Image 1 (tube, each protein chain N blue to C red):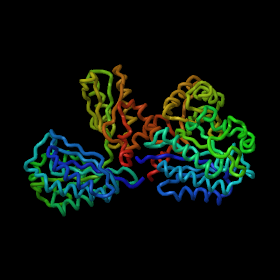
Image 2: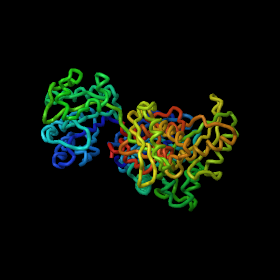
Image 3: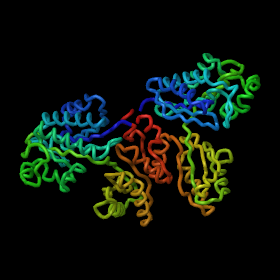
Image 4: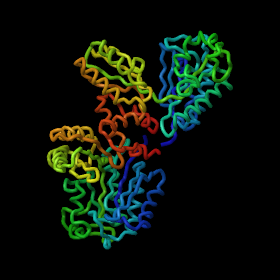
Length: 298
Length: 298
């Protein structure tokens, strides 16, 4: 397959379709970049765009979209249900095929530098691109949100990685960083007892002693009369779907509860599913270059 | 993804590299057809070539290769360990992506007709392309091999589907047909007792009452001191890998034997592995369009 990077920028506009179309158009018009999806959320007043392509093309498209967002979105008048700090709030770069995480970090640095210098927007490098531990977590960077950023940027420990040291009042602040693909993975339990889902979430998630790259909460699915362990798998190469699934199943059994199914919401990299098949079939020496589709597009 | 058909022609030459290179060159030179593999077998005196592309391009490449094979290979002087009846012995067409089996049958008819009429070679349609049940199985068509074909073609029930009614003495006879992808799938057992592998093969294979699209034998893997259920999965969309795997595991347990691993030999369509993941994770409503790589190349 070709060298592929996925980019999932979040823009602080989810109501004005015209604005979003102009932003998305910047991505569409870069040759060989493929727009996969964009979805406007009115309550959040936020739009998530997904596109892929060769890394150089992807960071060009991201820069152009960020430029138009800075022109068209004014953070001074923005409100919505989702935490946010900039017109282009965050730009994650995700290695998909034949690109390493380290290369993605390099690309995020190029992109962040350009946004900082040419668009005059303070930029933080986050996740795998973070230069200090305090900037790995986007929530820590974004804490205080747009309204608190003018003050926050004055603190020495929150000096941006690129761009001006003061807030860009119109465009706010942008975070750029490389991260593994995130998989939204939910496991459904055959009970309406929310406590059980919550207890199992506690067992599997990193924060409470579970798997390092798993975030989990327990939820009720009222219309089906069941509960769910709802997860974000933030690095399937290190914390795999099957291991978490098996653990949930084992824990559920303690309570006499069955796993009745699971769901993958949105996109999933092929390798994450191949890893599952590999594990359950106990494949020996399987190489993903044996997958026909991989060979065709290599 | 683009419309993709795989083609795996077998040529009756496995020793003369120059001849094979000339045949393969015909495939290479068709634009947008991708040659994935070719492997010469000296003992069998036979070469298997694998290539993929859009169906129209694929049948053009197959025709051109068949033409050169008819020029360069003389069946009157051919010997080798594998049953064979023609210079181009068999041309399977395999739907991979966005092409139905029915469409592949149509393409095999177009290809077979051209080989029969333009190259003057008797052609049988086999597998899913067969017009009568007796021609579904390649082994039935090929029975008697090249040496018996002159006589066999004289029988009314073995009148070819296309081409001359008499043997092409130099090029022999060719079978063309659409079939599902074949997956070579072996399951290894933690015992050196060959009888157990043989008994389990009997349980899972179609011929002795097992799964319709599974062929299986029991084998010894001497260097590892184990035995193996060695299978050809001839239609994974109907007989899936996981169901056969689970059955083997359950049967092995009867004898106090563990499944220690499995192997996929050669290429495998992505969907066959996705089906495995889907089953073990009990995925609800998963659609393969959620696979990132599928979306990129669609």
